[in-house]
Length: 66
Image (cartoon, rainbow, N blue to C red; front, top):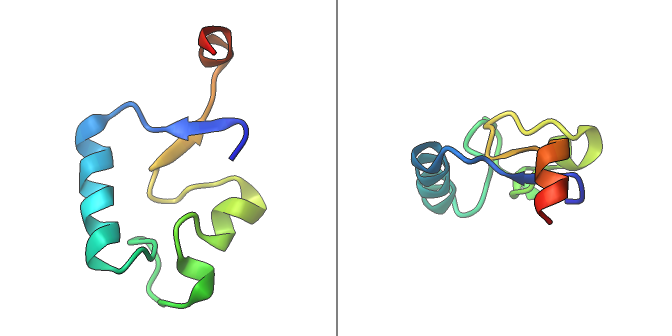
């Protein structure tokens, strides 16, 4: 999604990716498992807030690197 990037904390990303794999691609932060919870979940797409912090907002510094 434009304006976001993967979290730089590689250990955190690995934990979330493992949880996503175990949950068949569903957000590990959500209790329900349906089409709205597939990563990236509807909450993130609609509000720009990734509750599990897999995706974080790009900073101005990130934009200059691109």
